Image (cartoon, rainbow, N blue to C red; front, side, top):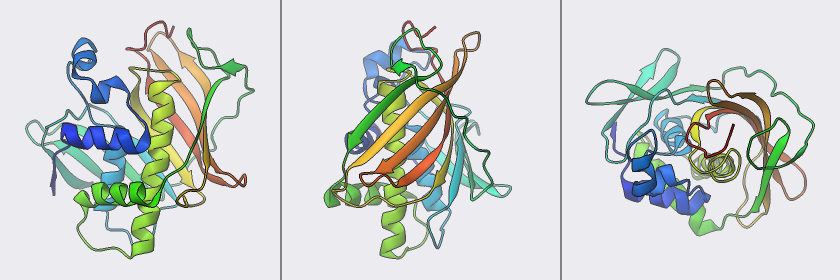
Length: 249
């Protein structure tokens, strides 16, 4: 299967998820970054691979790695990667996303909150958001994800997958816009899926810094999404590069 993330796709995912990190949507910012041009959201690539897997039910866990950037307009090819899936650039074969589905995950590291997001980064910094998704936005996410469809899915499964894509987008939004902030590059996201998003229900997303490696510009964070009733819908951990985040270290 061939997939090409266009700038319109990136702009749409940014609109639906809130992740307007300029490395995805601002060609001028991206040109001055280490990437040189806009790159696709890791959350969107993950959503495509999950859909390409042709699952009969929503996954219980996903583990995604982003070893190289996928540039807007670049042709990508979906293939199996052992027991998982991958997206690779067609012109040079470089893998841009590797995905394991329903693999066992290590428990995320807890941390004592120390304050709001800021720079320089510090362990315990947190960022959070409160959002909701309406039925039209869920449908738009489902349609975007269906670009990677090989088979038809039951409506409830397709909506559950779109809801997971939305929650990944919420996590990506906090990482790319607040903590570490504008210019963040997603490297890895492990997520345990515990519940589903309901249209118009308020959801609360939180990320917290658990480890910092300034010599490599790397930051580890715990990630969590809750419903308005306090039910944990998703939890996990992220690894990002803050190389292009001004003042991060």
